[in-house]
Image (cartoon, rainbow, N blue to C red; front, side):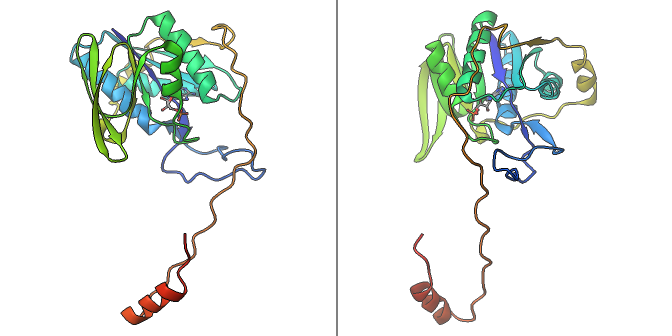
Length: 249
Ligand code: AMP
């Protein structure tokens, strides 16, 4: 079974996101970019499944600008067998990404897709679910544990009230939560080897997919700055402030 792992290039999670001056997006110019952290977890899970003999090949896919090649090279250095870049300079929304992935899943005859539960740039949290719907596959979102059997997967999911365990028929789309695993680091020899692994580039046109945006971004604004806290001298003063000054949120 082949596992397809979509990996998105996003602003590095250590960098504080700032709105662009024109309010039309997040400032990315000159800032460090990295693989979406949830996708690192997805890739790690796919690699572990392959190491346990449950998969034959792990294919990393990234959709976006040519610079996504860097993210794919990282995926190859971590252990992916090959990579596919769907190259476009156009803005991609989750529906468009899911449509591109559907074509690749079918072309590759993949039996499992593991993607992040959300990309930390737009926090949409939609691509995996849309992809499962387009493919007519089972979906198991926010996974913190995955066990594969011949025809089904048992997945523990992180939900608001705690944990939920479900069994889904294969093929399936699984989206990863933080506690699923701890991703490995790429070793220097593997970084060198990754340069020789296959990285194919295709375009949305070649895949015959319409990627036109369906949603219009109106404005990106930063949240209001937090008011500084104060220190109170006594409990009585605290109670007084809570009674008389606390704002109802
Ligand atoms: P989102 O729905 O945008 O929050 O993204 C959820 C997951 O879909 C991400 O964690 C990735 O696994 C995948 N994904 C989203 N956009 C892309 C992209 N442009 N290229 C590759 N994978 C993507």
